[in-house]
Length: 105
Image 1 (cartoon, one colour):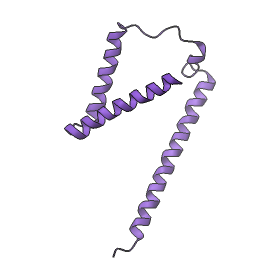
Image 2 (tube, rainbow, N blue to C red):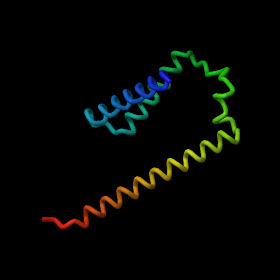
Image 3 (cartoon, rainbow, N blue to C red):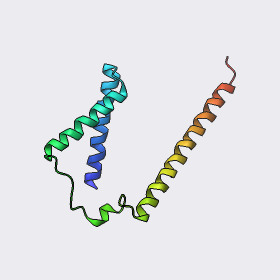
Image 4 (cartoon, rainbow, N blue to C red):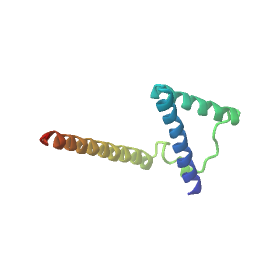
């Protein structure tokens, strides 16, 4: 649990750094995002001396190894995320329409 929280905090920190670079230096966000990706990927590759992750526990591998439960989880979570995004867009459209209907003073 502590490791998950540390991972989220580190991700938030990197996001804040990216946001500062985009807002402060007016760099294109895609360039900053890709530069961050490449920097950290290559840094980790250098730290591990190119060694890949091996000997993971079986319970860790169920998601991406073609197992039906892992595939179902990916499909269901993607559909839930899609439904959430569509719902948020619908709410935004309704709110925008309500503001346009108001009479201006």
